[in-house]
Amino acid sequence: MESGLRFLLLNTVVTLSLAVMAGGCSRVVDTLDEPSAAEPVIDPRVERREVRRPRIDTENFELGVYTGFISVEDFGSSTVYGGRLAYHITEGLFAEATIGQTTAGRTSFETLSGSVDLLTPDERRFRYYDLSLGYNLFPGETFIGRNRAFTSSLYLLLGAGSTEFAGDSRFTISFGAGYRVLLNDWLSAHLMVRDHVFRTDLLGEDKTVHNIEFVIGLGWFF
Amino acid sequence: MNLMPVHALRLLLLGAGVFLHFVTPAQAREAHYVVEVAEPFLELHSGPGRGYPRFHIAERGERVEVLSRRTDWFRVRTAGGVEGWASRAQVSQTVRPSGEAVSIAPPSRLDYLDRRTEGGVMLGDFGGADVLSAYFAWHATRNLSVELSASDLNGRFSSGWLAGLNLVHQPWPEWRVSPFLALGTGVIRVEPRATLVDVEDRTDQVGHAGLGLRMHVSRNFMLRAEYRRYVVFTSRDENEDVNEWKAGFGFFF
Image: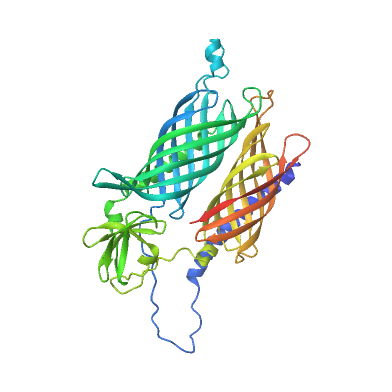
């Protein structure tokens, strides 16, 4: 389109956004500086009790790392590393963002033929991210020995994201289940199995691939 | 598509957050909130949830320290040193040693209307491609907000990303299901599939107008759905029009 219109649009949006932000800030100041109203007819002389929100440390976020195995369909299985950040909404529901990476192996065709390489080493990097919703299904306690009990729960995960592999990124659905044991008030241990499903035409035909991952990890509540 | 800078930035931010958490002086976090049990007893569960067993009770008149909170559960320590988790419903029945009520109500409808910051994710269709987007909004007034968004696009023949600045006007914020209008601009990056013959990657400016619905579900949780019409200002003779539909959820902080 004519560059004039483009700049007009860009300018309008940016200017309006700045105006809105500035307006919002000044509104806060306004409410602080508001002059007191005229003397009331009746002075009730009621001391207003101030309600203060208690300052209690909230620990709804959980940051974690994990490692394990992932089976990249047609490309063997390899070690995967990843990180996750969860936000616990209620005692049951949580939202989670995950990033993981592995280096895929060789297809059996490549191994048997000896000298053929379908992908460059760079393209073998398999990296995924996803945003999921999780639900703590079975809360309970795990007993280790006679005297030791840990709080635990089994949870389900369902999410969507993207997988970058063989020079392309693909829309990916992920689902799975995990087992979380709280080692103390702020540290958790996880055992997780998830499947990352996406469609690809990498080996000629268009097909759905399943990449199942089995990992163990640690999480910190903060 | 190279996601590295985005990932690196994300990790850096997380790292900074964690670092700040751990370097906060211990005594600053140790100043605990003390409450007195006013009902016949306060139940202590072994974990932060209804399903975890009760293993101890604090009796009326006993003072307990509130150590931390996770969702609707409070980790408390009794005078005898027993630590456990108490529900919000029961903790809100306690009183401060001064006799003041403990105000720990969940986010209300008013908190929702007066929210300042909001974030969420949405999933949908962008001109035939799958789109997954995350947004962060700052509310200047109940009606007006500014949003930053990032979308990941994955189509059959190409993939890419879209980053944008969005101005949102909500004429009736107090409605439970409330419509909003959006106007914005941004940058789109499109990369053709590696399995196709080489086509040039493109980065273009986009402009959009949109219409959507927002619904406050409960607490700080809301649902959101929207339609946007994009104009991609290409370097060719003609501009492209793209329709986008998406739906998702968000939280306010």
